Image (cartoon, rainbow, N blue to C red; front, side):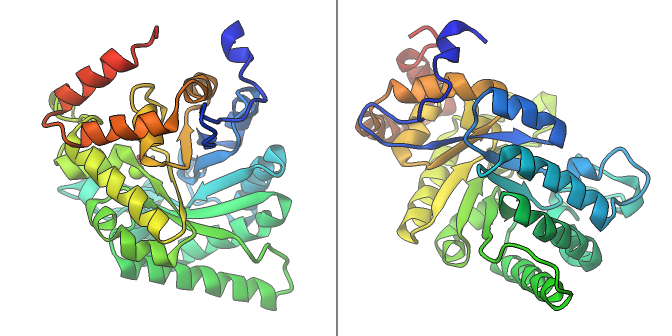
Length: 325
Ligand code: PEP
Ligand code: MG
């Protein structure tokens, strides 16, 4: 670690005018936790649980999953860990789920859709997370929510899983926060309604960009169109944050944009509460945040909301927040 960044260890992620945010890390497996702690993340904002399901020939059992979740929770102590339930499908396939070949896998049978269609898979995972919950500070998040019904169905299965464990005399934490990823435009648009049913949101910009701009995130031919500076995306994000706050819930972001030095000031200005990113970006992001005034960033964020093109936004932010500033 370079010396300037090392100085950030142990400091709060707070602006010059005392607006504190949380800087969290994204992980795929328990092995990633060492780097999370080394880089002094304040929690895990996204544990992509599907990695436990990948590169193997059959589904992990409840006990196998329990061990993985427990390990992460124990290592993190009382710091929050957001476990995202299975997000398989799209570009991430697992042979044993037998997902039929689709014309448009990213618009297909994946994530929460697959879990609601295979309730046993979902229930097994929720039970494993619940059992592990006594070892740390876990929160649960559902991916790819596109309708209110999916959220309510997922919550029902979660409640039923708790009831089952209670009947079996197995202990778990009863006050686990439940959140959803906002990564589909329909969810962003009805985020005022969804906010009344959850404890938090996490904005998944990787998919939100893909679906908002109708640009396949894996198609390199379209990479010039896949932009996190598109004004449509920034307006959508502003709306999500406002809707969350109006409903009294907190909102984070766990897509790649959350770790972009040029966008951090903008999301800070919009009032984002939590930024979750790859561990190596944590300390430099803290440095950025500690050198900004939130009230100034509000003005700058508002300015970008009225810009016409992604290039205009990016150029403007590059001038203001060039890496060597
Ligand atoms: C996202 O879509 O922004 C996200 C964080 O999820 P993933 O990249 O795993 O789809
Ligand atoms: Mg996603």
